[in-house]
Image 1: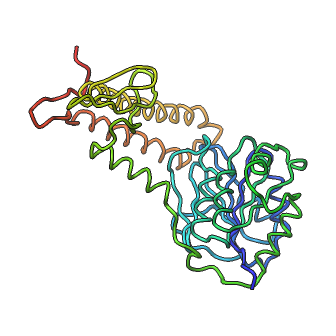
Image 2 (image 1 turned 90 degrees about the horizontal axis):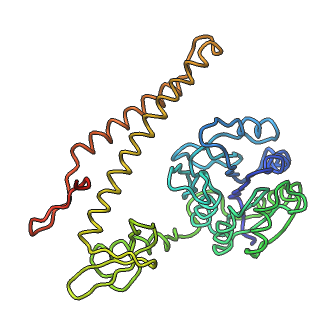
Image 3 (image 1 turned 180 degrees about the horizontal axis):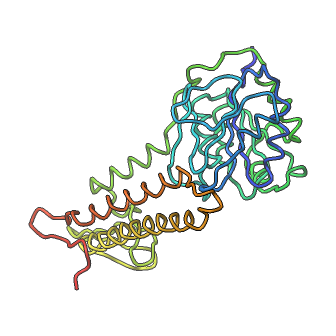
Amino acid sequence: MSQRRDIVVIGASAGGIQALFEIVQRLPADFPGVVIVVMHTSPNAPTVLPKLLTRSGNLPAKHAEDREPLVAGQIYVAPPDHHLLVRSGYLELSRGPRENHTRPSVDPLFRSAARAYGARTVGVVLSGALGDGTVGLLSVKAHGGIALVQDPEEAIVEGMPRSAIRLVEVDDVLPAAEIAATIVRLAQQPGEAIGESAMTDDKRAETIIQEDIAEQARDQRNTELTLFSCPDCGGSLWQVDEGPLLRFRCHVGHAFASEALMSLKSEELEAALWQCVRLLTERATLTRQVMVRNRFEENGTRPNRADDQILSDERHAEVIRELLTTMASPTFEHGETLALAPSS
């Protein structure tokens, strides 16, 4: 019996909207799988993509919600400024770190779908610049899934398709219309329906990172690359113990005893937190100014979303300010204290 491929994840960026419409309008109303889409968007601008997809095809489309169950025959779209992740039977939204300088990013969607559903996953890379989606498509293939890529000759922006073709053993390179037909054929093959994960969640990378952090905390990384960055140049630091003395050195040559590095990290932390206060205050103030400027154009009304953003920014700025005034300085057992702020 053939493996049913009913978890379809699609990644697109510049020029990808037309290809996405080509695919969606050719999916039948009784499509037995789910379609999950990441389209690179501005983090601050609302998107009407779900409405446009619903109007252009036979399947309903919506912005995904956190912990939302997967339902066959539905198109889910990543909301602005959130990664969209696939879990076993449901979706998860995350504001985790940007990947390829974007959020949402295609790679987290593809990786999470491959981990949750393995060979049932179909990854589709459409028009876009640079290489987002390539690493995720590698994960889809590694878990037994299918990799489809839009023909670069058809794509408005060929960067993403060409990157995927160059680095991934893709199953097919097709025009958007033929991608739709392939998706339908794969999803209609006999096999298990949407439900429990087809394979266990693979968290090798996360595990390695956590093990490295634990080793660093246990002082077990002598002569190895550490998790720390150089306060002077931003480069990685190596741990270079000299007898009982704990020292760190970057490849440029900047070197620090542990006490000096601790003091400089405290300064970096304080500066970063004050920068957060500044940015939150500036954004809240700028939002108020824009609302005043646009007030008459909007008939004297202010969008609730803008008011909520202002209150959120001001509240977060105050929380960080209070944290800065109460933050304790690091202290060693023998009584030596490193000041949070630089000494005069």
